[in-house]
Image 1: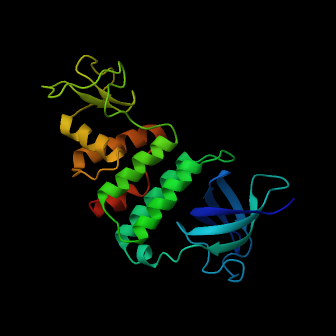
Image 2: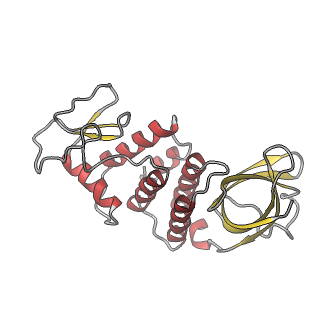
Image 3: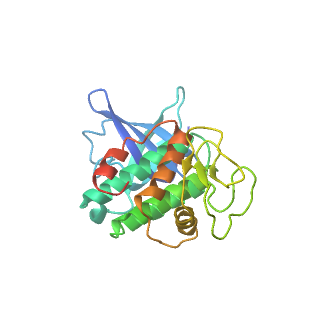
Length: 245
């Protein structure tokens, strides 16, 4: 079968045998793609700089004849990412972004929006834009690209717009997809009482603003993400230690 050349982001890698690696990549037209990189731990000709997580690359791959793994023939870096890799905070944010993309991306399912958001975020990290607002803007954008965005502006159950100054009774329910107005009491114990300004800050974040984002609204995003993925991200612990979670 003919090789395919595509832009890609390295999401993760696994050692395989004595010298090979299995590489997960996100591509715009083929979604998540798993490939075997023969002798990746030895060859620097086909894989200059090695196969590094969250690298933005041009990959040449051959479709599988049988089984599920493509074959990685050649890898060319498209950006040095020296700024990103020189910062522990940048590495932590990039690792979280790639872990989310690996979970939300699907094999053989085109993901142009998710790919573009991941590329843009990694480029911003490489330029030094490392902060909680940028991370959570990416997380919400990735969820939106996958059709899983939480609702902050309107009630997730009845669709009602929030009151200008709600006295009390609003909740955020990850199981129902977001905000619940006072007229829609939660049905499950996982619902979280919330303040109007938390939801407003998250809604503004989705429109491109960068409001102050305290820990409480950030935790709403984590809860929603965990609901969608069925688990907590492995990268959460380091982000929490660095006060970015």
